[in-house]
Structure formats: C-alpha cells, structure tokens
Length: 295
Length: 323
Image (tube, rainbow over all chains, first blue to last red; front, side, top):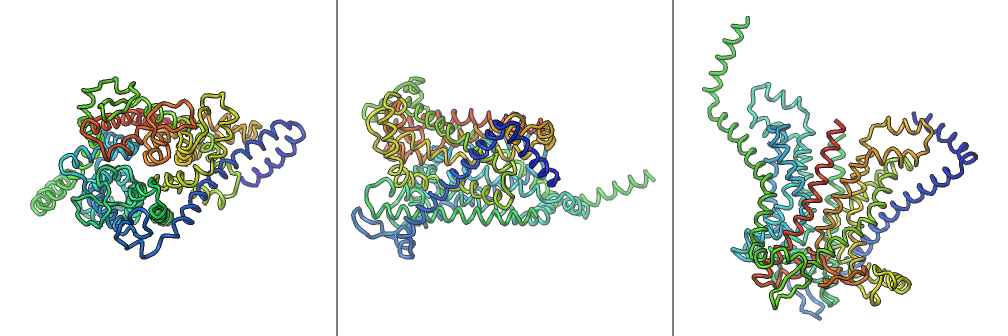
C-alpha cells in the first residue's frame, strides 16, 4: 500500500510539473500554508511557556512557596503560601463533591442505563454543561451559597465542583467503556450481583484510567480563576477556615497581575508558573498512562 | 427436559431470594443511587440556569429588555445596560474565529494528510492539545506583560496607515484593546478546532480519499473538494464549540480588554465583554448591581447555550449519519 502510494506520488510529481504547473504550484503553496499554521501555533505555545518560565523562576523558591505574609505595596517581601493552602482547600472540597457523585453517575450511564433515553438526555445535558462558561458556575454558587453565608472556600469548592462534574462523568464513562464486556459477563455468570460486579470487577479494572481522568479534571480546575472570584474571593492573610474567604493561586495571580507594583507582579509570574507546571505535568503524565492502558 | 429445567430455575429463584435478601437490597439500592445521581447530574444544568435567573429577577423587573440596548453602566444612578458588553463579547469571539478557523483547519489537515511521518505529527498533536490546558489567567498575565508591549508598535503602524478604516481607527493604540483579546482567544480556541476537525477527518471512510486520488485529484484537490465537504458538519460543530468557549472566556477579557464601558467600532481601542464586566465589577457591587450582573450572566448563558446546543445537535446528527 505505502509502496504503491509512493510510486503514484512520484509519477504525479513528474506529470504535474510538466503538464499542469498551476496545480503543482497551488498544491505546494497550500502545503506551505498548512505547515505555517502549525508553526504559528507551536510558536505561540513556546512563546507563552518561555516567558512564564523565565519570569516565574525568579521568584519561585521555597521561601515564597511557604511564606505567609502578604507583601505591602512597595515592599520586596512576601509569598503565596496562603494561596496554595487556599487552593488546596477549595480543590479538596470540589473533589469531595464531584468525584463520588460523578463516578456513580457515570456508572449508571455506562453499566445500567446504557442506550436508554434517560442516559442520552443526561449525557446531552452534561455536554452542554461542559460548555457553560466557568464564570457562570461562580454566579450559580454565589446565588446558592454566598448570598446566604458570605464568601467562603466552601462556596468556591461548590463552584469548582459544578465545573468539574461533567468532565468527571465523561472521563469516567469513557474509562468504563474500555472494560471488556466479557469480564462483566464472567462476573455475573459466577453469580455476583450488579453491585458486586461493579465494585469488585468493573471499577477496579478501570481504576487507572478513572484516576487519570480525575487528576486531569482537578489540574484543569486548579487553574480556573473565574468561578472563584466571587465565591472564595481573596484573602491577604493565612486562613484555614473552610467557611471564610481564602486566597487561591489563580485569583491571587489575577489580582497581583493588575496592580502596578513590581514585587506583586513577580509573585503573579511565580504563581502562573506553579499553575502552568501543575497542569502540564498532569496532562503529560495522564497522556502516557492512557496510552499504556489503551495498548 | 423443559419442565425439569423450569423446576430447577424456580427452585433456584426461591433460594436466591432467601439467601441473599440483604445483598439484593444492596444491589437494588446501589442501582437506584446511581440512577438518582445521574438524573441529578442531568438536572444540574437547569438548576444553574434557574438559580442565576432567580438572582437576576430584580434587575429583570427593573430594566426589562431595555437592559440589552442601554449603553450606560452607572452604579451611582442605578442605570444598567450591557449593549457595549454584548458588542464586545460578539466582536472578540468573531474576530478570534477569523484567526482561529484557518489556523485550526490548516493544522488539522497537516496532522491528518501524511505530510510528515508519525514521529513528527504525534508530538505536534500533543503539544497543540497542551495549549487547551494553559490556565486562562496565565494567558491573561502573559497578554498584559508580553503580548501588549510586543504588538504595540505593530498596532500603531496599522493604526497610522489605515486610519480611514473604522475597524482600525481612533487615537494611537495604547495597550488593552478588543483586538488583543481576540488574538489571545484565538490561541486558546485554535486547538479545539484543530482536534475536532482532525478526528472528523480521521473518521471519514478511507474510500472517499482513495476514490478522489484514483480519479487523478492532487492531495490538495482531494482535501478541498472531498474531505472538507464530507467533514463539514464536524468542522462546523468544532467552530461552534470554539465560539462557545470564546464567548465565555473570562480572565483574558477581564485582564486585557481595558474594561472600557463604551462601544468602540475600532478594534484597536479598549472595550469590554460580558464576562469581563462581571469579573471586574462583582467584588464591590451593591444589591441592584449584583442583580444586574446576574442578568448579564443570564444573557451570556443564553448566548453560549444557543451555540453549544446547536454544536451538540450537529455532532449527534453527524454521528448518526456515520452509523
């Protein structure tokens, strides 16, 4: 196949250059354009990565990662340890809400309700929910939680959890679909109930792929500032109060980026580097894990 | 034979009922639990819409549909309208698509049409998918401190030489503008178009391509006259999904649009988007203003829902055709 294709290609080249120069040149021109598209995309990616790495690495050290104090405008001192703790609180709340919820809902979609009208509608709704802007998840959490009890890490967790849920459901469902139907049949054939089949056979088999999906959704959610702006809000001090406002890495990066003081801006770059590194590492690792399980 | 089998079956049935009462309850309970949770996941979308609309109700009653065509946002006098933001949102997304659609489709063609060996296209495909993962706040930061200074001289030159064109007119560009937002947005949404278009091309039957080649079409004639028309619904839905993402992108708009509350026909001048408005005003908003921002959120929700539902329907129709 490939041999004959190459043969045809060579024939074509000779023919076209002599008989149809316009076809040949337009073809070459379009190929050039297409390669240009790829180059532009890759260049912008490396441009962003390069700048974030270059600017961020200056201020990225153990002191800043653990330091609590907010730098007063003009001072050279400070760190974002409090924002890391805040991010962890918000993300663990989001994980506690969306992981069990999403996994069980995906179990229904893939194991018990496959092909039903209900599953179709739920999937449709989840796909549309994936496209809902992150900031609207924030407005939702504001309307539900914040109006009653004020800004809190908890409400930020709810906003992020809503954001993550459709992604968790979709990635878990895809992981469950990879489990061979034979294993389910064998388990049922041995007399186990649907509960036992799911818990002892299907979920453990799909576990690596499921966990990968969960980590990836968490890493993506960690970089979202929009849903946190008016839920967990911001806090310039150390806080571990789940029901009070906390600083988070993306929100801190946002607020430090838009104020005109150099020390804060440097901290914003360092925060951006931490966010970026987290997401890129999670994406790369998950890519290799999924690649392995598919093989 | 049959009756014996039936006897055996029924006797076993009874045994199961007796032996496994608790595990049967567990089993049925588990299935019902997953059912309830998945129904709730389905309802969540409606819940998000209703809650936001409910919070927006005071502003809806106060301003009605006039909210959509009023150009003032004045918290002191409690006059609110989002026409400049609607304009900014649509304009930035459309201009971003102008850049991203050719870039995305060109990339998808490069990745599927055997221009390069697999060991080149696979890492490139992965790198392009990484762009989607970059947090938008990072891109916003990069936009403020790197992209704006870098493109300022170019923008000024364009502004100087094409002042007669309203799209590039106005005073010399200083920095934040709708065009910058569009540029960053196009980097963000390009991979969406590229990856969906790519998988569309890959899912098309091989015979289509072979047929065109056998008739003597060049590679590019095959792409332009066979592959793109055949994959059109996939491409269209990828564009709509990308547009949905661009409409709802918040941090980039809040950081580099300039948050100027007026309609500037010129793309080189500061503007504002619905998301940028919500993000920048929510912190210090009074009661009616919060409600007005919720109303703006409802407007944004309607815009993105229309785009996303259309994209979803096109994709599903396309999948049905395939089967």
